[in-house]
Amino acid sequence: MAYRLFTGPDDRAFCERVSAALAEGYVLHGSPSATVNGSSVIVVQAVVLPAAIAIADAAVASAVEDLDSDGFGYEETIEGHA
Image (cartoon, rainbow, N blue to C red; front, side, top):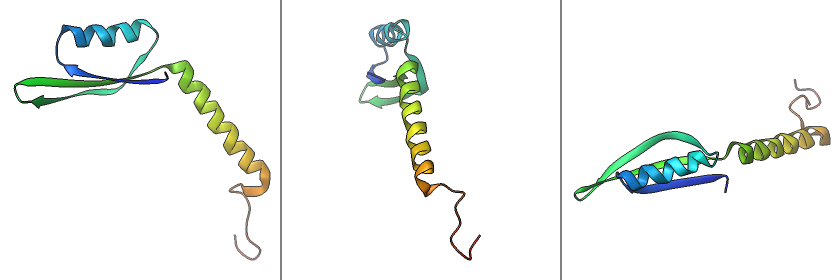
C-alpha cells in the first residue's frame, strides 16, 4: 500500500506500529493529530511509501504530457484571442 493511516490510543503500541512502518520504508506524511475520546487520547498518523508515490507522480506527469501532445496544451490560442 502506498498510503497507510494509523489510529489508536496514544500508547506504546501505537508508536511501535508507526515505527514498524518507518522501518519498512514508509515516511511520515503530515503532522500527527490527536483528539480526546472520553478519557483517552486518540492519535492519528499518516505514512506514505516514497517509491509508490514516485510511480504515481510519473503516471500523472505522463498523462499531462499526453494531453499536451494531443493539442490540448495551455499554449494554444483561440483564433482572434491571445
